[in-house]
Amino acid sequence: MHHLHREKLFSLFDDNQSGAVYIQGAETMYRYGTDYEFPFRQESNFWYLTGANEAECSLILDLKTEEYHLFVPERDAQYAVWHGYVKTKEQYQEQYKPDHLHYSNEILTVLKSLNPEVVYCLNDEQAEFVEDLNRSFTVDTDTLVDALTYCRVIKTEWELDQMREACRVNDEAYIEVMKAIKPGMHEYEIKAIFNEVQLRNGLLQDAYNGIFASGVNASILHYVENKDQINDGDLFLMDAGFECNGYAADYTRTFPANGKFTEIQAGIYQCVLNAHTEVIESIRPGVKMEDLHLMAARIMMGGLKKLGIVKGEIDDIMENNIFALFFPHGLGHFLGLDTHDVGGYPKGVERIDRPGIKFLRARRELQAGMVITIEPGIYFVPAVLEPAMEDPEKAKFLDVEKVKSLLGFGGIRIEDDIAVTEDGYENLTSVPKEISEIEALMAE
Image (cartoon, rainbow, N blue to C red; front, side, top):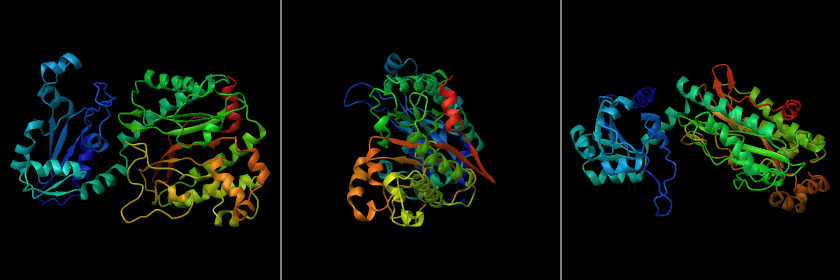
């Protein structure tokens, strides 16, 4: 299927131009000068175009003939001693099916034979490599990034299938965790249960550093220590996912460690769930991400007002950015070969300079084929709320005593992975999220 990705890229370039694309794949990374190898993960653009999840490879695409040259390392017997195999050229050819296969020391020879007027690279480091090979090539580091971003934002059906499988396994892992969790366990035990399900299903690479946060830790947006003991009465926020052939699953559930929401936990959870549900039901081509973000914020503020945590007119609460005190991150982001996938801000689109929404990771109109996360949340972060309670202009919108009583609450986030379709959306996530469904699952 990667040939379709190359065809999509070729279609963006002038047919008559004399140009070439050069991309280096990722190299093996070691820990601080030792021979400890980090698990290898291919650079996403290279993987998108080749399907080759191997170290020390590179590619050249001839834009005139639309031919694909793959360059692979020439290994010796010593490599086989440590790694168990050395692939032959024939094996590389059979696996990746390039138009031309070469060893890496032939890059200059191939470039000279193609004699392009311009070589398109991803970054300055790769551009310097090309220029060091031969100063006669003109190098462009802007065009290729924009072109690949354009290609990767709209997913093919094959890409969607990889994400559906990643989400299928993620669903299973979440459900096993929700059935197994008990007060007294540690966060890392929950991570172990989650990871075991992923590995058992053949997904070997996590998509990001997962968050397994109990109690107050759930108010830390990127909490990754995952070491504390889980207490009775804690909410547990889990935000984790693995990759299938490089494509990520990324979602979040928040649930009571003891299986039963308290009244205030259920009240705040429902505020988030209402926003989550209404936003997803509004997804279709042409809708703007920033409008969805503000919709979610408004719904959550309406919920917190009913609970007596904020006060005043909702229009005033929104206009004064009170929502950002409780919802300090963006509503969601693009998802694909990277967890925070490319394309969130097209060229010329700037971030909105407004509390909360300025952290939105994607600001554009939705199109069919995009995959996004929808992840509203409410958090009680002392470092944010304590100064607000001391500020008369903000404090007048808060029930200060109630907010103070909730400073140890933690946070709630609910996140699904959504594919935009021609007439709406496809939700790739199937983990229960209604309060009654969660409690029934956890009681099994």
